[in-house]
Amino acid sequence: MAATNDRDAHTSSLPSPYPGYNTRYLLNGERPHFGFDSNQIYRMPADEWQTALFDLDKLTELVQNYVRDFYTNQVPRIITLQRYYNGDNDIHYWNSNKTRKTADNRVASGFAKYITSLRVGYQFGNPLDFQFSDSDVDESEQENIQNLVDQFNEANDESSHEKDMAINLMNTGRAYELMYVHENTTDPAFAVLDPANTFVVYDTTINQHSLFAVNFNFVSYNNTKKYYIDVYTDMEIFHFKADNDLASHLEYMGDFDTHNFRQVPITEFRLNNDRVGAWESKLDAIDAYDKSMSEMANSQENFSNANLLITGDIKTKVSVPVLDENGEQMYDDSGQPRVKYKDVDPNDRIIYLKPAIRENEETGSTTVIPSDAKYLTKELNADGWLTYMKRLEHDIHKDTNTPDMTDEAFSGNTSGEALSYKLWGTDQEIAMQKALYTKGIKRRLTLLGNYWSLTAKVENPDLVSRFHISFTNNLPKNDAKIIDEMVKLKQTGVVSDETIQDNIASITGVDSEIESERVSEESEKMQSQALNISKIGMSDEEISDEDKHNASPNEDSTAPESGQAR
Image 1: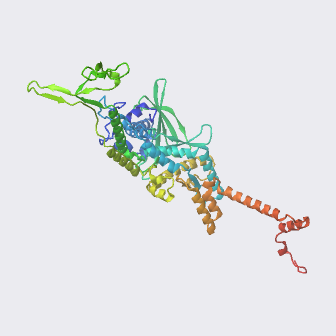
Image 2 (image 1 turned 60 degrees about the vertical axis):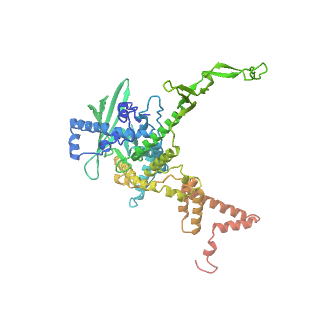
Image 3 (image 1 turned 45 degrees about the vertical axis):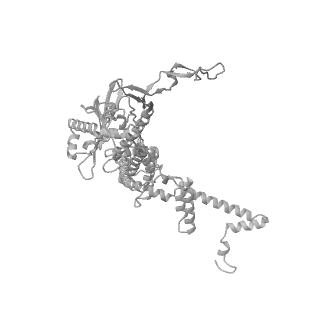
């Protein structure tokens, strides 16, 4: 299963020569696609970039050099990681040195996808919450900015977008997001870019400001292969193309577009400062697990196809009893059972053996070789193998801070506190990852603020990034326990109804404000019903007096007594 539509890029991630079958030596300490240059951050002086930006030849040469280095040194690592996520592990290309008649199975595990899926679901399974957090801003402007961001998120399916970004993050340690404007509209949008096709070049300052970003796409049609390369600066988008080989000469397509985001519109999100994937450090353990599983499959198949060792002589004829017309055994004159001989039928799947007698002409002795038949198999230490597999599995989960959901600690009757301890390591790592992801979202909001200021939707673009981003881990919940705790809190009288409604909104599925309105309406309705019940059996005159009293409940207390001045 290819992780890209570019066969050359896919091939570069495989052991050479393509397709690489029987060319990958597992667990020998070599991982050629993860060398020193495979994950370098590109940086250059800002003044040299400005010089190249205004010289087309220098710009083309600069972009060509970066694209060549990225395609040669970084793409193989990224696609290798994407292959593992897709189940195309290096075990499929293992040089096992097996003979042609020996079982040679290649069983790939699904650890990469399991870890990525679990981490993405746990961290991004619940939608992120965007709340404007600057109370010094005018209330009407707060509401305007909040509405703009909410509308943008809803129009662009922000929740699904975050999950797609997170998959790239967990797999490759980096993810890229492009801000753009829908054609023939003024509506901004974002898109997920493939890490194998995208990179950003930063300046040499401590803050690492983006100088430009590159995204390229491979297109194959009518037996023609072409690469289209887009270079994004803080104001323009330059377009290049290359034929067949991306590392060869780039050709400027003679046009460029402008954008209104005032910064490079591609944002790089990082899982960690090293841009290492969630399970990348355990690739050796995954390979060891795959190799051990494959060898077990080989042992099982070899056992089924084991060679049969026979000692003694094989009979070609066998004796069968001679029966009379009544099916009874017949005997000869000496009282011995009568027999006859027939050829052995090979379709009987039975081998008839007899001891082999060998005469030694030199010594005149006779050797009798007992007859026997047995399969040649290697004794399998199943217990040792199982211990080894469990150890590998345990280490993979432990070192990636990913819980094993088959663990008894995750059974249905386990308390939430026990689960929290199991997820403690995961939560510590995610806390760091959330900070980096929030940094990427802040830059997204900054780009939106720049664009909206040009379209007169906001006055101060800097305000748009002043949001508090809340992550809610996607944990199984005990709704009954939550409700019980809220009831106890309400009885203490120290917590407001609004706070309680906020906490149970995830259970009822109703927003706290709407819930408050419903409670008020039901309270008024119950009071009205109680009043109607109290009127049962009263005369019309009494009901009229009662209605007057209810209409002016404070009238008696405020009316002056007879003879008093008003």
